[in-house]
Image (cartoon, rainbow, N blue to C red; front, side, top):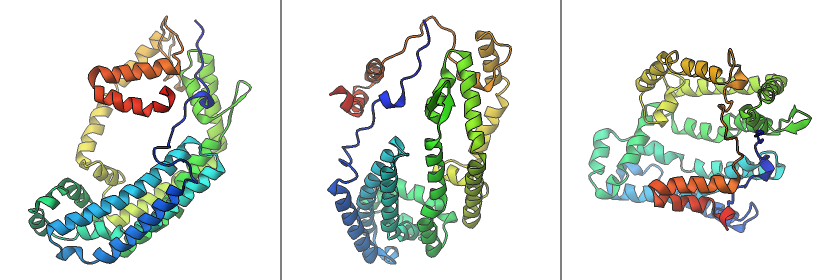
Length: 346
């Protein structure tokens, strides 16, 4: 049976984000921003410089208020990010995404003091406040927050770093995303997106895989100056940030965020590297034999293994397989999955 190409992106279902907002013009967007801004200003006026003297129950109440503000900002940010991820080439969506990021940054600037002040008390002082059951509820969050205590900068520098992200790190990341999304790769007489071309690397026809691999390399090569500038700028930006925060190595901030020690990650990396000959190298040799090749090229890594079953699984069948698999071990997860697929099920 002839291999069927993946369905074009335009033929696939799209996210239904109406559970968040009906559209970028939804009045609820402006309403939520106004409410979050008012709450943030009141919160800052009430608690700035006062947390150290509050009892545990009062700190717990402040954290609950902080949660409510962050939930609203998170809802707005998630909607804008998902909308942008769905189509990063639409200038109207890009403008909305940037506007939301700017407003969220401005509002959250009033909240930066809160986590900084929560990290200032000594462990003994905080432990005494945690004796209150209301604050003890937030103990895991406070524990994770205080992991970053040694890397905290002054309030002024923290606020500067937060507000500059839009025109520093965040701006370069967005430039990369938009550049890659706008790239078109010519392949077999078609103009394909990067994602659609990458899908060709899983084609059963090796000539298609080879052509796609070379086309991708050529397209990115044509953009090498810009992509290198983005990468080098982001690397230098991180170096500066890590230096000011006194992180011992580039991966340390990510490891802290994942709540794992550098040494644990080192042990994992060493174990993986030592297993290369026994596992990955052996696997690629086996795959080359399965494909009847003396050696795999980079465009062969995602090649499907030889099989007599080369059916194209339609979206409805794939959806049913996923829901059935979830339902076999958790009806609750299957119910959540049905909510995710709801627009296509209606």
